[in-house]
Image (cartoon, rainbow, N blue to C red):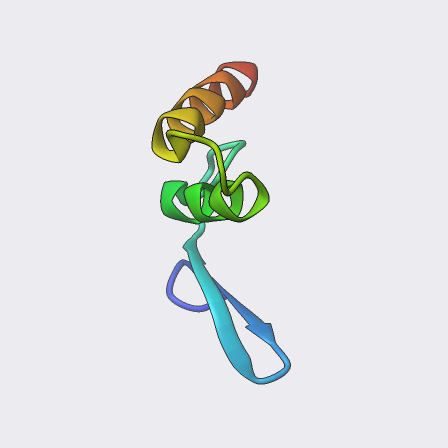
Length: 62
């Protein structure tokens, strides 16, 4: 941890950086959308699906 950030490396390459918070669920919406796009490339509206999924997951962790 450095400067309230979590720095994630693969070998020596920085692959992600996330702010550390007290939230039970800590995500970056853009990364989630990207992962859905890879796993579901033919889905018509990945952005809407990501928003709905993250809202539902957020309700669980309230």
